Structure formats: C-alpha cells, structure tokens
Length: 317
Length: 259
Image (tube, rainbow over all chains, first blue to last red; front, side):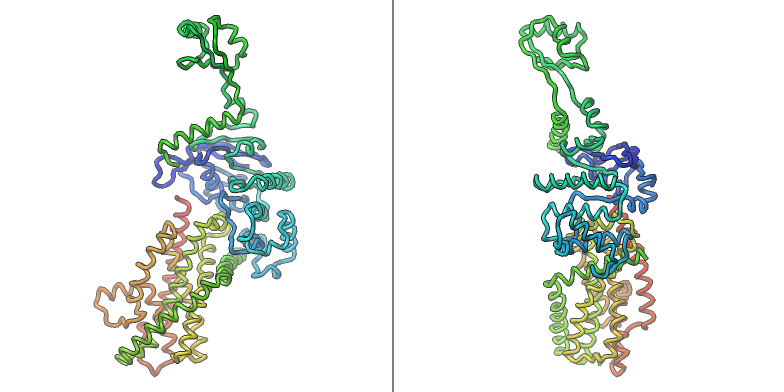
C-alpha cells in the first residue's frame, strides 16, 4: 500500500537532514507504527507522504501513485489526523465536516446543513453518535473538549473513505481517559473499515499494538519489523562481572574469546550464549555477577535517551 | 463542478467567520467613516472647490475604492493565519486544485470586504455626495471587481511572506505609498515623471480610477476626474488579476512545499 525508497528531506537552511534516507513499506490493511523520539523525523515523513511537503530526494508511492508526480491522486486516497488539531474552531463541528466532504468531492456544497442532501445529514447524525456529541455537533468547535475534537477529526477524515489513514501523534495533548477512549474508537474504525493505518507516536505502549513497527531516530531507520522481531533486534543481553584479580580476568576473557568492555566491572556480551555457560567457563573467582535482560521499553528509552543527550549538546532538530 | 463547490465552500467559510466576529464587523463599519469624515471634510473646509474639483466627492470615491481593495488584500492574510492555526493543512492536503483554494479565498475575502464599502456608501448618502439609486446600482459590480482585484494582489504579496508578523510589517510599505501614487486623496494628473512612472505601476491606481469612472459618469456636471476610460481600466485590471493569481499561486504553493 505504501512504499518508501530512500526518502530524504533537508529543510531550507538546516544543517542536517530531517529525514535521512529512510525506506520501508506498509501492506494493505496493516496497522503500522512509526516510533521515535521528538524530532526524529516522523512528522516530516508524514508531511511528505501526504504531499504537503516536497522531498529533497528519494521516492514514495501510495496505492501505486507517486507522491510527487501524482499528488492529486494520492490526496484523494489518504486521510490524515495532524499532530496539532486542524479543525476550524470558529466553525461548528458539522460545518467542519461539511467543508471536508465538499473539498473531497463527496457532496456538492450547500450554504446550510438543511440544504445538504439527505444522505449527508444521515451520515452526520450517525457520526455525531459515534463521537458521542449529539446536538453539540452544531456548536462551534471552540466549545469542544480535546478528546471530542480529536474524535471529530477522525470522523471527518473518514468521510471520504480513505485507503490509508495517517495519524500523527493523535493522542498528544489528551489526558489518560481521553487517550484510552480514543484508542478503543480507533480499534473499532480499523475493524469496521479495514483501513490501512500509519501511526506516529513516541509512546512505546501505543506502538506495541501495531502489526509492525519502524523505529526512527535522527531521520534514520533504527529498527523495523514486528514488535517481537524488534525486541530481539534491539535488546542487548550481557552479564556484568568483576573480580579481585582484574588482570587475570581480562586475560582469561581474552583467552576464551568472550567479547568484553569496560574498566571493571566488565561487560561480557552474551550474543546468544547462555548466561550459565558463559559464567561456568570463567575460572577466575568472581565477586560481582549481574545479568542484564532489559525489556523493550528499556531498549527504546535507551535510544530516546541518546537522542536527547545529543540534542542538549546543541544539534537542533 | 467539484472545484466550483470547493471554491464556494472556502469563500463561504470566510463569510461565516466575519458574521460570527461582531467586533470585526463593527470595526469594519466605523473605521472608514472616521477616515472620510475627518479627512474629507477638513480638506473641503480648507480648500473648498479648489481647481474646480469637489474634493469631498474626490476623496469619497478614492477612499471607497482604496478601502475595498485594501480590505480584500489584507483579508487574504488569513491564509497565513490559517497556516499558523494548522487549518491550512486540512485545505492543502485535500485533492482540489491549488487555484481553487486561492480563488475561493480571494472570493471569500472580497465578500467580506463589501460591508466596509457599504458603510462608506451610507456615509456618502448622509453627507449628500450625490449617490442616486442608479449610481448605487452601478457601484455594485465596480465594487466587486475592485475587491476581487485587491484579493489577487494580496495573494501575490503574501506568497512571499513567511509568517503573519512579516505580513503585518510589510503591508504598510506596500499599501501606504499606493495611497498617494494612486491618487486616493490627491490629484495625480501633474506628477513629476519619476512619480508618474511609479504611479502607473501602482495597481491601486486602476481600482480607484475604475470607481471614479463609474461615479463621474453619473455626474457629468462635475469636472472630469478619471484618468483613463472604463474599458482601459477594466482591461488592465483583468490582465493584472490573471498575472497576480497565476504567479501568486505558483509562488505560494512552492513556498509551502519547499520548506
């Protein structure tokens, strides 16, 4: 459904690439998560895929249409929930939906709700029910809560039946209950419409529910695959050992061909070897043994932590 | 049909916003009154019918054209405002033509500018500027042409601006000189050659002259003020409109996509 090949974007007057040659693909009907810390290039990637930003180089297709050469065809096939709310707060919920429906050619324009065709009015009533806003759909969006606005945006983005729905950090700015209810709702949308969903998030627990995850950082793909495969890929398992006689231990580790690092305690990479076997092979008496088997979250936080440390040094995203 | 629908939707959105913004509506109506009331009457008191020109009528027609034109041009700023509100994302990601977006916006802001013109016209009737029913009817199409033209000019100027702050900073430099070059308050028949060239380059000049053409055609007893014929003005406005829209849209889309 989505194919991306060597996509690269450097903003004007930027010193480094916001998106630095990423490639991945998304299958039809898949729930795909683009995971990464703030400034990793997630929003830039989505802006390029939805044709509002031109790539510097590389190519991408959505449902077989090139995003640059056939931008108009691509726009017809995608729906997007932007990171920052993009409802017109002066208009009512219904007016926002009507505006969208007309721009996507679903219905011809009429200046008032009553003059719109009957199927449209039925659809609005139905959608209002789904979002749980009843007659408030005729109130200005200004009066809505954050969660309501978000749901309305999703409702709006589905009105032209897109093949791919992009969600750019849809839960940012929402409190926990609103976040939970939005997820339940999205799950239902997915089940009922069988839409391909590409989600960006910096929350691991949101990404873990996806069919596949692509982790990006500094505009590059760090890891890519099913949540299980990613775990295997990212998680580094090692034992930390120390002894009274460090010289002997280093010599022995070298002799055994065990990759190690540090100034003591020493970090010995397991690389698939069993912890027990490794420890058993060491004869030098050990006074420290620590096994390190992190969760996926630890591994991810490690990536994010590195990114933030580098950001503090002064590279601005 | 679909593009037309989209143009109407975009235009209507601007109109809805105006109608829901009472403060702006009141400001729209009051500001021009102060303008003509103070300037026109003080000029009239100081100079009277100097040079055989009724200054009040002269300033009235100038300010009417200028207000319509400028208000529509400034209204197109709201495209930039949208960008900062992130609503433009919603418009720009939709499959309609970029020209439809710009034309819808220009049309919307033109309609929004009309109430200001109405306020000036009412004031003109009150001070007895000579606005009979026939003149009023003839002024309506002229006003529409002027606002649409102003909106197109706005597209061109704003296509080069990065944000709203830049827009509010640049606008006076683009607008103020045109007040004088286009002869809103001052006759521009005998300008020195370099100002004459600049004057001919000022788009507002043709909007003002168009309106005066219409007004003075109903007042043959007054000194003939317009500089060029109605046809000439319309032709120039049409050509400039096409250029502004085409170039402005292309530049705007490019600056949006190549950030």
